[in-house]
Figure 1: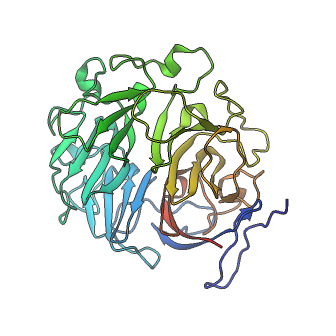
Figure 2: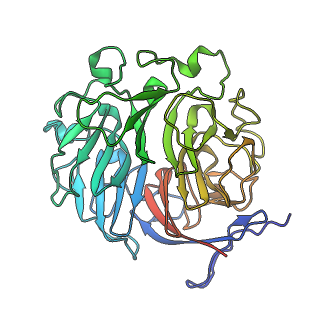
Length: 395
């Protein structure tokens, strides 16, 4: 099937086609948030400011806000409205007292307001949720913050806002977290990717502080946190190594199992520990190998850290291959299904950081977080210290 490479030097109003495989998706990079690269090859400046980022790992937007986890600066940035111009400064910063300060725990200030490597970010039912991953908690603001360094209302995974120890200093349980990188609220269920405990916790409804999870996926019980359920050098249809992100809708739920180089998918409502119906990135459920020195093609994944579903389209951040893959229709059963389109690389067989050339609008380097919404894709392009907004259209 014919492949069309991403073209450069196009008119600003022209749609940029993705590399495609019988696909009708078209895309173009439209907005660059973060400092520009000064010499092309050199990475953009990461000094903290209202318009500069350092290794962002999470991004979310809706019709009213864009939120980015500026992970390397241990803060979260909020833009009111969706930026339309490059290097638009953020409106609000959380985790730091101002836009010029950086450092874990807000340089020794109150951990109640500080952040340590935040990753997942989302607005759900007009509340802001942040995965404060190295503080082993999900922070919740009951309303969208309007002030810098605003204190959250409560934490999921810790007894209070002052405690930040993994698994609350003991064994894992239905109330504890360890390196929680992602979460989502789908079909009335709140899922947390409890990465360090090799599991996903499920709650019926949005959890409050100290509320125990209702069920666990990926382990036999709440007290166990064994990698791949103790399988040696392999996996199965309901085990995880580093489950990192969650997305889906009423038809399908997908987990990005980055450590096993795959995405698992379940049909229908997922409210118990059961076998997945599909695996992307591997030939079957038992395989979990990485192939860094071969042509990747449209089916293989290397450390996929993020997944996003919008309408019927699914996008996967194929992080170590420096690309985002798209499927026009949500895969529902089987193995190793080929993607329909790719951005960040000129063909499905390429995987170089910034095309092994230079930082450009259509290149990616260690893309870590993604979010699809209304024909746009926000990309936390971590290795390039920026967030990019792409226009995504389907004919």
